[in-house]
Amino acid sequence: MVETGHKFHDNVAKQVAWAHWFTFFNIVAISLISLRYIAYSGLADSSLGIFYQFLSLVGHFSFLGAMVFGILLFPLAFLISHNLTYRIISIVIATTAITFLIIDTQIFRLYDFHLNPLIWQFLQKPEQVEAIYSINLHYISIPITFSLELLFSFLLWKKVRKIQSKHIGKPIALFLFAAFVLTHLVFIWADATQYRPITHQKSLYPLSYPMTARTFLTKQGWLNEDKLQRNSLGQAGTNQQQLNYPLTPLSYAQKPTINANSNVLIINVESLRADMLNLNNMPNLEALSEQGMNFKNHFSGANNSRQGVFSLFYGLPNSYWNAVTENHIAPILMNEVVAQQRPIGLFSSIGFVHPEFLQSSFSQLKTIPDVYYSKAENNIQVVQQWVKWAATQQAGKPWFSYVYLEQKNDHLFSQATHRTIPEQSENLSLYQSQVATIDNQIQRLIETLKEQKQYQNTIIVITGTHGQSFKGQNTNDELINGSHVPLVIIWPDKTPKNIYRMTSHVDIIPTLMQDIFAVTNPANSYSSGQHLLDNNVRQYVLSGDIDNYIIYETDKITQFSGNGDIDSIDWQGEGVGKAGNENEFDITLLIDVLSKLRRFN
Image (tube, rainbow, N blue to C red; front, side):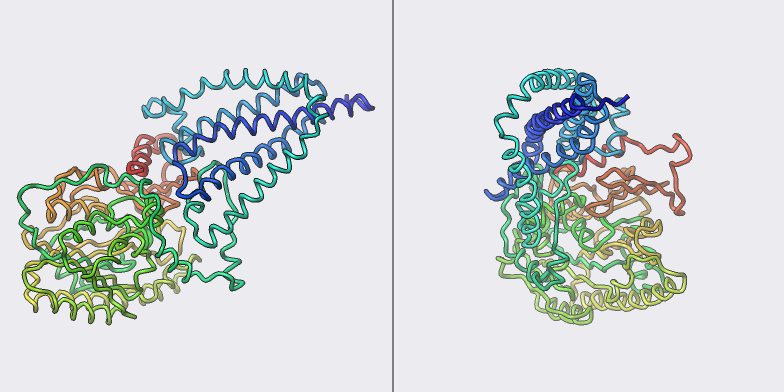
């Protein structure tokens, strides 16, 4: 029976007043605990970035505390008239929330993820992964937290009237609300101006979704994306300590390799499917592959061109993309090329801003004099300019060249909407026509090397940036074909053969570093890959983008995201792991993947 009259209202008023201060106490507590996120991620790169770290901490967790009060504690004050019961329920809610926060800070320290359904599976099976034990030890905090909550709730209940009389509640509430609003306003500005010390904090705290308005500002004409990108190229890296890359300084064999004076030519074709390498679609490359090593089961490190190029040059997963591009960290491959003073020729009909070549792979080259940047509008001009550049190279002096060949209508193939069968056929026909043209352009590059008598002294790497699907984005077909690309390597002193083991773009850098530059470090000290001719059969290769990761195994493909979504299909596109526990995903394998995503942090 619900009690009415002044006694009921007075009781509710006291409970609500107590709940206000109990919430404030917990906001202070969770803010102090959340300092661990800053400790694990490191302070921002500027005073404004550091200010935002603490401002957003206060604003974000004040908002979460207010949500708990508004959704749970406030309504319960009208439903539960017994004061002790109300306070005990509030204490249980607060203890549960703080316990999850403590566990989340440990998850963040280990894997750079926040607690989600996928991570929760780890906590259910601690026997599989030793690292989980250190997380489960945090459960000891439950009785300690409960005791402290009980103590402070008792003191607040006794002193609530006295605290209320001081009239400090409104100023505190206004301060916390202002911190919350200012957090989002500052992030809108930082996102619009690409102020990296703030934008890289987007996922620092759990359940944090800072507001952006770049699309709106662009539509209003107040923001120019191209100008913004050019401005970001001029920003020097300010926090290269975000990455420990390589893990140890590179060491070299005393005796140079037999390939030390070989030229290196990397031909990267935009969105080139693996099944296009055949006599019908690419007859020239198919014939050329018989003279070299043809990797039949090769995968790009990404399902898009930006991170696909990144994985090729760095040998790292896409989780390092932001740290590299924001801080203009050069790949060790290009550092070696520069150290050897090799002439460098870079050729791309889409320029060097998109993808962010100049912020990543070629970031250190703007101060190097002997670098040629092409200024081409299409693949034909790219090939023409490369032919002229190659003709100017001195005999006996090894050079490095990168050629990016675009798919002119790639935007049509990458539309998000699902396509009808006629639309798929039309796109496939157009795509095959473009691929045939690109095949002829690759052949022209090879013929030039032969004419200039450089073919026998050039290591040629030909591959795709990523694959392609004609059935639309977010489909099983995209999972199967989005990263599967051909890889053909012409290596003069290596035996031509077909290789059917699973290989990845991240394997290219260890191969070049060891066999050309005589680097003796283990491959895992500077990449996530292994030597392409290493016969150790890997359990999986990793691909995807910076939001979703794809694990390719011999029998299935698994996609998972940072928010905990996970799904597996077989190579025919049928779902697996849904009928029962016999196909449950291997948590140990996933932990290994997560460790790779954090290894160089």
